[in-house]
Length: 271
Image (cartoon, rainbow, N blue to C red; front, side, top):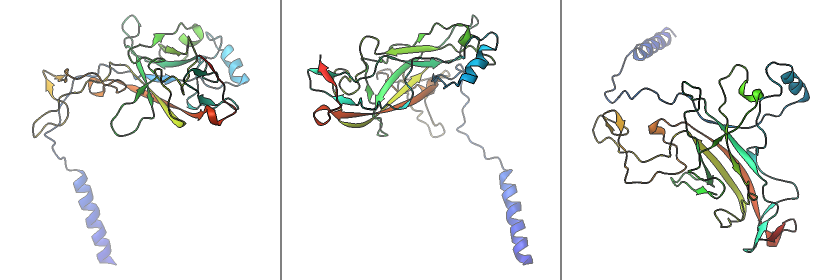
């Protein structure tokens, strides 16, 4: 029994001794200071009870609760008795989504409190882990179209105990419905369940970087403190530029497309 106790004590002593050792790492490199302290984020409205609404009205300078409107909740998109359908080539789906907004915030501002960052977004259809970036629906959300500032009243601008929200938005389907099953840049998609992921970022899309080619350096190649890019390659739309200091946020919608020939609930109309 005493021998077992002595063995345990010796083990703990060696563990503590090992924890106190500092193992040098010759591959550590100091990078430039942070130039993007605030992270971009997607914004969704919060469900409000009547009691919360009355409480907001009672707080000065608020007149109503500061939450955006006219957006589509992330997650499953499913309207009872109004399924999304794949229509014949000369028709469109009258059950398609009506206009909705995608909201983003980014806290980075200059000395005049004007927003500093340009916010870009992309829609990815059924993304996988094989390295491809399936950018889709650029007819509804172009990867080169920055989010635009949202005019806000005092209720949102003067939100208590937080920085200015700098709310921006994209409006999808402002000219026509968002027909996910029939109009992916003019083409229909396959029947079944699909995932539509939105990616937003506060820097231009990622351009591939040159990798350091030495035995002691790991990561991108640096020249005079700057990352060396492979400018002979195009930006990869939908991929945030993490080496360049980008922040990003993602969310997903899930929806189902039925074949109009197999459902009486479909609502296809001529183009």
